[in-house]
Image (cartoon, rainbow, N blue to C red; front, side, top):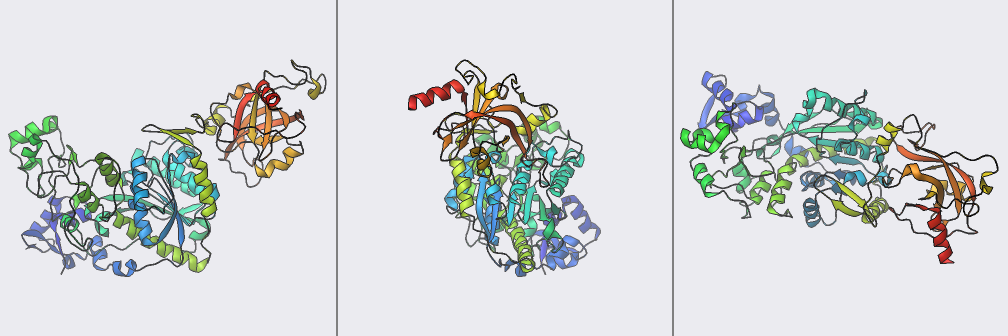
Length: 607
C-alpha cells in the first residue's frame, strides 16, 4: 500500500489542506497515521483520477523510450538550462540555443560546451538557414503584454511580444513539432484573449495544437508544487497521422526529504553550497515557526510587528514567515529564496535555502554548475522548468517523433553549415545591452527599423517618391558636376544572389531589402541607389523612384503577407565606372548610407 499525506493529497488535487482534512474527518475516505503524519492509502482513493493515474502509471515503461534516430532541436529563451537539459536527457540533439542573459549563457556553455549557444536578443536572429533541417523547436517564452488592435487576434496581434519571436522562428524553420511553456495563468490572462490570440497564431502558422494541459510537477518526480502550461503543436501535414500522448505520472509524490537526502532521484545528501542568510532580527522571528508553519504559528504581537501593513490585509498570507516541511514538496520556488511575501525557510535550519538546495528542488543534477552572482544563480534556478518535468515531457515527445519516423522515414539533417552561418552573422554584431533590450552593429550602434510599424504608417502612400525630369533623357540631365547631382544621398546595398544577373545586365527595376534595415538611414533623403555585387563592388547608378514597404514575393502565389521588406522601385541612370570598384559596406556589412560627393571623392583618391 502506498501512503499519501493529507497535505500532499491537497497539493496533488489543487485544493486546500482544510478540505482534505474534512474528507478524513467525515469518513469520505479512510484515513490513518503513518510515522505521525495523517493521510490515506492511495489504493483507497482510486476514484480520484489523479490518484488512479499514479496507481496505473506506465512511468517505468516510458522511462525506457529512446529515439529511433537523432532528432535535431532548437531552444529559445533557454535560461539556466532546465528545459534544455531535460529534453537532451530524453534524446533530443540541440543544434542551437538562444538566451539573452549573460550569466545564464555562461551556465549553458560551462555545463555543455558542445552546445551552440547564442547570447543575445532573439529578435536579431535569422533562423531561415535552418529551414527544413530541425525536427523540434521549444521555448519558455516570457508572457509580455499583448496588443489586440487587430481584428484577427492572430499572428499580427502578437507583434512586440516574445511569443511572436517564437512564432517567427517556427515560421522560418518549419519544424515538425514545436512546444511552448508558460505559467498556468496565461490561460486566463486578459479574460482569455491572450490565450485565444496564441491559439489563433498557431493555427495561422499551419500547426495543429494538441489540447493544452497544465502539468503539476509533483506528478513527475519533482519535489515541488509547481505548475506549468504546456503547448504542443504538430505541423498540419503530419498531425492527422499521429497522436501525442501526455507522459504518465510517477507512482508517488516526492518531498523535500527526497531532494535533500539520498533518494530515488539523488544518490547522496545535498552538498554544501553558498546561500543568502537572514538578518538576526528576522532569524529570531522564524526560529519560532515549526516545519510547515507560517505567521499563524507566531504569537500575535510578534506576527503583527513582523507583518506590518500586511497584518490588516485579507487573504491567508501563507507565504509570510513560511517554513517548509521535509515531508512535503516545496512551495513553488521564486527568483529569490527570502522575499517576505513568498518565504521559503529551510525546514530544519533557520535560513533561506542554499543555491544547491534550490537546484535540487528543481531536480538539476549536482554537477550542473550555475554561473554569475549568487542573485543571478537563484534567478536562473527559480525561473527554470524542473529538469525531471522536462525529461518526462521529452520522453513523450520522443515517442511522438518515433511514430512520425515510422510513417514518414527521414534522415537527420546536417545543420553544421547553417549553424556556422547563423553564428557567423551573430559574431559580427557588437552587443550593447540594458536590462530590457539590445541593440547591435559593426562599428557603431544601429537600431533595426520596424518595417511593420512603417507599413502601418505608410500603408496607402510611398515613403519616398522622387520625380524624374522628362524634358530630356534623364541620364544626360545637367547638374553641378556634369551628369550627377553630387549633393544627393545615395544608398549602397548588397545584392542577393538570386538578383545578381538583373543588376549585372543593368535591367533591374526592383530592389528589396532583407528583414533587417537600419533605422539610422534617412529614408526621406534618399535619391540614388548603387547595387553592391559581392566580391566585385559598385559600378552602376540608379534613381530611387519610390521607396515603400511591401513583401518579398508580393503578387506571387507563395507570397507571405507577413514577410515585410523595404522595396525600392529603381531606374537605371548610367554606368558610373568602367569596372566594379571595391568599397566597404559600413552597416551590418550590407548597407552604406552616404552622398554621391563622398563616393566620387573616394574613388578619385583611390585612383
